Amino acid sequence: MNAVAYRSEWVDWVNTYDWSDSYAFTFTFPQEIAENRALVMRLMKLFLNRLDVAVYRHAARRNNRRCRRVTVIEGGSYAMNNHMHGVVKTPEKFSKPMFLMMMRLNWKIITQGEYQTEPYRYQIDEIRIEDDGKTGWVSYLSKTLHPQNADAFCIETTWLK
Image (cartoon, rainbow, N blue to C red):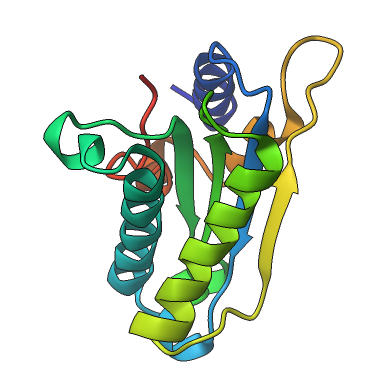
C-alpha cells in the first residue's frame, strides 16, 4: 500500500467517529525530553490516564472506562523532537468548558508536579467540524503516517469505543 492510500484509509476510519464537542491538543517538550520517545509516550499515558480517572473516577480502572480519543506521537526532524498530538471527545456528562479545565489541570499536574517541566508549546483547541461532517484535525494528525511509520499512530493511548 502506498503512503497516500494508507493515510487516506486511516483518516476515513477515524472520521467514522463523531468528533463534535471535542478538543485537539498539542504538547511539545524541552529537548532533553523530546529526544526520548519512550518518555514522551509515558507522559501521554499519564496525562490520558489522569484525565480518565478525573472523568470516570473508579470506573476508569474497574470497568475500563475511557474518554474517546485518537493520539499520535510525531518525531520531528530526525526523530529528535518527539511531541504529542491528539483529539479527545468531551464526555456527555461534562460541559465543554469544564472538560477543557480538567484537561489543562491534569496536564499541569504532570508537568509541574511529577516531572517539573513545562512544555515549550501547550495548546488545546476546540475542534471545528467541516460541512462534510469531518474535522481537519484528523487529517492533520495523520500527516506523518505512512506504512513505514505506522507507529506514529499511538495504539497504546488511543481509545475509540
